[in-house]
Length: 369
Image 1 (cartoon, rainbow, N blue to C red):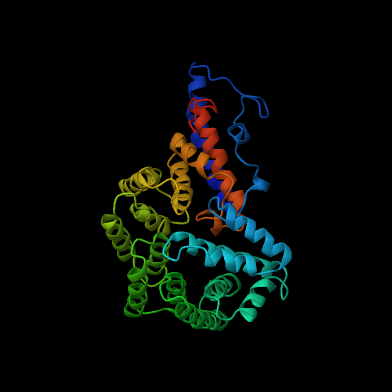
Image 2: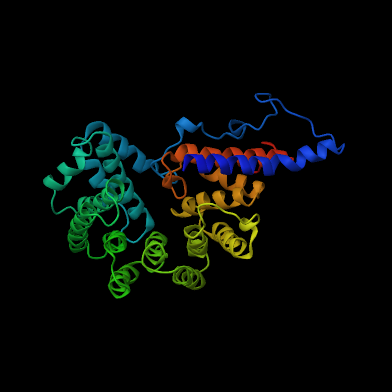
């Protein structure tokens, strides 16, 4: 995969610089800039964070969560996490993101220190068995462990997901109005190969509690994609229907772009693939969603991250830069998290955006914040 992204980066750089090199030969007189010179394409000139300082845990800022995560991981004491989730609205997207973040932190700890990491989550479950937050985090933790540590379809994979299913049911009983246990169950349904009828039963419980939940729709979209249990047509229908029904200001208008991303081939052979009508329409829908959404919508960063990926691939440098200024510093979102090194993956695209923006006359001065 690293080789593939390297080749993509080379192709994109050539596509950026080629026209300008040709213009220079024709007498337009584009001035060459030496690497490291003050005018060279430098992401730090835009206030962007250095690669080694990018936060891979979250898609965007959540200072309360980051503070609690730091406390929990430094002390291995779970009570701060319990308090934060107890204070988090059950009906919104933030609770889902925080449950995912706590589960992801415990899963990564265990991966880095087998048998030892994530002890705070085990203690949380043992000390507070009736805590709905602990059950929700534990269920999500098991799902992440299954996808991280086992091959899909293997015996270990199924055993872990079956345990996750039991914990989601327990979490749902502890917090009847909370959609998060059922959203986690959507991922279990994908892994265990639920029939469409079985999946619909879980989905009905989700939308009864949170009909406009963007995170839930993303989880459902994964199920409907052809590489799992649906088809491209079913995934596209699910996404476009949700977008059409979404009220103004809802980020569900961006869902078709996520559907397109699910079906982008590993190697794109069509030269103008990212300028085709399908990609352009989905991209415009996502841009509309971003422009009309509340500035504090917790799912906004998710959409912006995916937009950067498509806008850079489509050589829409200025628009990509306008998204980057809002999300830079955090890279815990698709598409970056699907690579082995999310920070490096994001940095490649950010550097391409800066280079393309400056090759077309842009500068830190001309980029509005």
